[in-house]
Length: 74
Image (cartoon, rainbow, N blue to C red; front, side, top):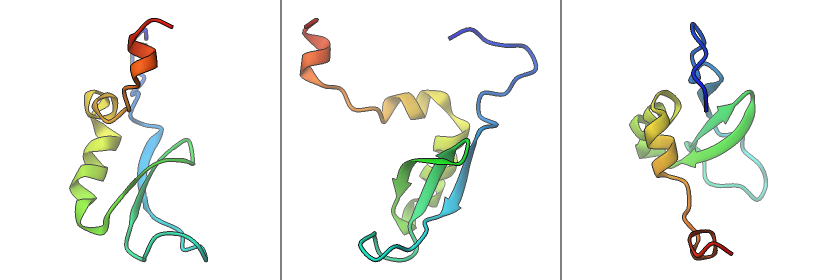
């Protein structure tokens, strides 16, 4: 991904309290959003990890799932 001068790639991310839904997680969870779209959820005691997620691109990349079929070249 090219780096654009004076453009912070983290600016689109923020941490918000998770909205309560009838079949959602218990209260207190945190949601990391990108441009207002929920992208990752964190337990109540992992607020620091949520903050790191929105500020550290390398940390976001480390949390992506690796699938065997993607590594095998098929």
